[in-house]
Length: 328
Image (cartoon, rainbow, N blue to C red; front, side, top):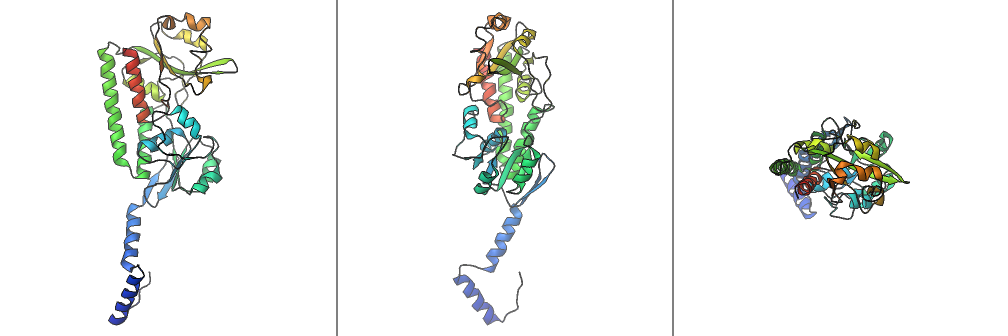
């Protein structure tokens, strides 16, 4: 700002005039200094440098994993992809506001997002690069790697820290991680006390689409698989999972390869009838009903609404449900 030398009288008059208008020069300098001190620079999962004027408040989330993390950090997104789907599948960390539905997770509406005028858009690296490029024309974008089969829990925590940095909620992030570690320790002890340390365990979800049942094993590379192993359970799946989410694929015949004494657990959802084949389509299937662990009653349906790809709060509720189910 250009400054002019003035006589004492002129300077006094100018100061009085500015005061009368409700504006002073030092206040402007103070605001600029505050803005500079709050500025945030970070590097997202894509390697892109992201610059923010300050902690993001109006945030849009294009994937449920990231939306859950934001809510857990105390940030209510103004826009969420497939709001109805989130409310159905992630009841463990419910929406606390009424965000605008921005479209599907794979194809968010650019016009809808732009109309929200967000400070920040949080997008999964699963989103096509062309879509991310369009989003960057609307507002700053932080890309998050939703999953990493080589270190599922580490990736979850890394994502949490990244979003906490962007939203100025690092203290809450530390609390969430501490609470999650405590939940793991508590659950591990409870299972060990019940004689279940090292118990064989297989978690899956399944779908019945067009009378064709498909089953998705959660291997050790999945987030849930990693949590299970931290709890002292032994993953009984022998199929390989993908490099990101650690998910395999099989059918009812593939279940015959599981150990006879395995504990088989799954999560379905009554809000999505295609997701409950173990109690519906397979109820009269001879292969399913003849499985030793089915005959023994070692099939456990865990509560609806625990998002299997969520964050520390979803995983905390998952731990509680596993311990409760296996020790009852």
